[in-house]
Length: 167
Image (cartoon, rainbow, N blue to C red; front, side, top):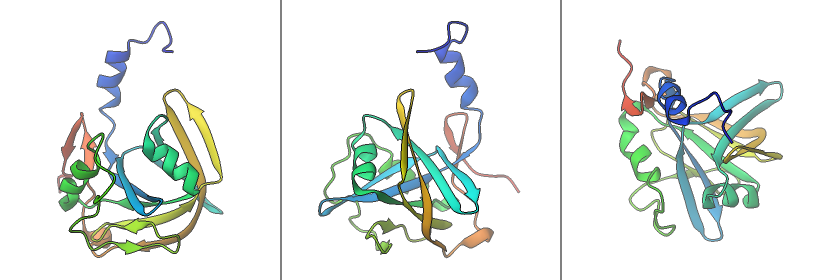
């Protein structure tokens, strides 16, 4: 429940002024890949390498990641906005999510999106309820840099819209 002095609509408007990188979280649900676009993830610690991500608590993605106990976070490059849209559509069918995409795989079998800036495979060790979301936290067990690397720009969202960084 919101604090009485904070208007939720105004909070949404102002929090949209955060420039955030777009990423895709992937995991397996039985024989199927489940992927979802996220913009709420965090590098928590370098020692040991630990990350966290926030997923809507009632979503099948949050349930699947927690049930699997692992996931892969692929940081999207600026030319991957279409993937952010593809995997950010609520209620997308579970079957065929990777149709037409030559994805790599982590040791746990989670999809690594080709062309992503980098990927981080996580083992989920902790889940915390926070308002309507579930914060999932765990060590990085595998990682890699994508083809574009640091030279490519990130896919970002600012003021509720997809944007590009200006040189």
